[in-house]
Image (cartoon, rainbow, N blue to C red):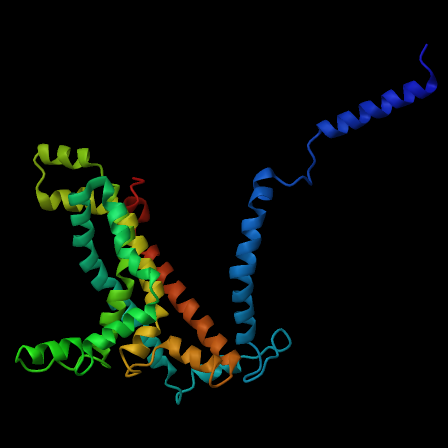
Length: 307
């Protein structure tokens, strides 16, 4: 016969095994545990700075009383009639919109040609356009300064050929737009090339065999299938263009003051972090709002081929 001790131990062991077999409601899913390092990195690298900027936006002007005060004085200063900071918003958003539209027109034929010429290698070839990103943006822009400046490469070369000097290009609004087109071309071209690469060649050939014209094939097949890449490129270019600063400082000679420059001045020379945070927060809200508004007006289900 089994002793009392053996009976009690068998009962306890069975109860423990039964409890271990039951799923615990407090157990963390394996996927969430695996994603914890990435989530932590995003929280520390993205969410925490954004929360800090938002907190500073409501702090006392020209102070560092973050999380200890709440005031709308910074936003009131921005909307004052005597404050012309709104012109910086207009310039930045106008440049971003113009850059996005022009680059969409410029990059599409380049991306289309890359796909027609190199086929499945078009994505790899388009990476060559990304190589300039390995060089500092300021260095590349100063290279254009040396090209356009008086007695520089362009002006000196024309004079050496016996022609009149080069046009006054530097330190104008047009130079800023040129710099933005040059800097943000890879951000538009690469997603657009990948979008065009998603178009099945057999589908285009079938449409052509059925009598579809070139314009109809582009409108009904190529453009809708490539639209995800085009939208990504346009959205990325617009967001980056709205916060552009180096182009206006280097090529524009501060002939145009963008909102990014106002934010930089508030954080550095003025030492008014709450005002700079309010401007930055307002820029984030405006750019995000415009992007969401544009996306809401588009039939994404049709563009992405869901119907």
